Image (cartoon, rainbow, N blue to C red; front, side):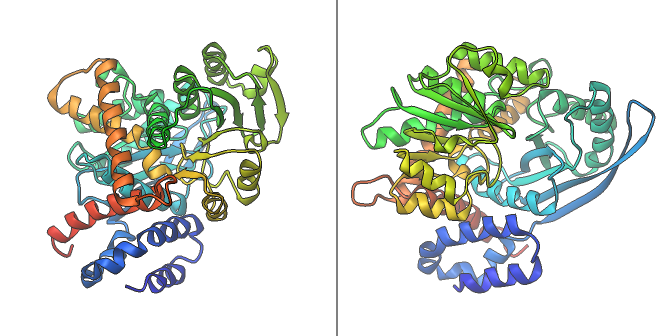
Length: 445
């Protein structure tokens, strides 16, 4: 199979979709050996079908702000692949949202959801609406306007959205309330809901916890442990904070956190109370600089990233392409031995090449940050059963799912001269093979 020809057709069809082509090239490159061993994949244009969304919905979102002015945003839902189950993936509210971003996220989601082993298809959606600085009333009215169109295209057995950047428990609650009113049903159509109306325990913590569980498995595979390791974390949102908390619980020393304006550094490591204080600061519209002004031993560095600080483990948890070649070289120079992605595609292709050439253990987000969608899948199960599982039960299942994802990556990624397995190839092959088998079994659709 000529992968280059597939990529060339993508470039001709969508020359401006840089993020989607980056994700597609990365996936296809990791699948090269597998595809050569499975020529039947080419028979039904399966790769081409995988890279083309089954359905894309674009719609206008009209709402009224607190001053009575009419505002217009654009809404999207990319229903990428339904071969394994209902479309599943988050909604992102951020000014950067466009079709390119959402298609790349939906493609990553396809492999990630397959890795969980749960019956989940893949999708992604959102809007270019910016919730920062908006009042609670404005956010509620926007969510209601957004759902007044989206509700036609979703359902518990069709498409089950969740939260993502800019969409937390509050926003999911407003979206769910409007869906309930418009559909006349109370169902598990959205995940990430509040615990009083069908949400799962540990859903806000799941992605960060799952990332650290994967890291624990990866280090254990090399007869190592997180205990005592210096961990550099980027971001200050839910994923970053909960990854930091779980790493601290496991005895690691979390030395950095960051936001779009700069980073905070604490050589002896942040403690759980400081991370909790950061959550309160963020909830009130503040940033990481505010914690530096309050906590002992915390320094703030404006317009800097975490990657030049010495660490053993790097966990990029902020956003796509936040870590480039320069940053990767700084990590290598600083003695980093592991890079595990907590965000979706936070490393550029150049950064991944530097990391792999240097022999660092590297785990892509499609495997390492699958904890969020895993617990979303568990929330769907609880909703279907009309049950609510305890935090300890959800945590036990989350750990088992991340353990299984790691096992699949090792099984399909192998090892290199006693070093870490090729997690990038392992994740791609394990996830793709499951989706491909389902697509082939269902015929040419």
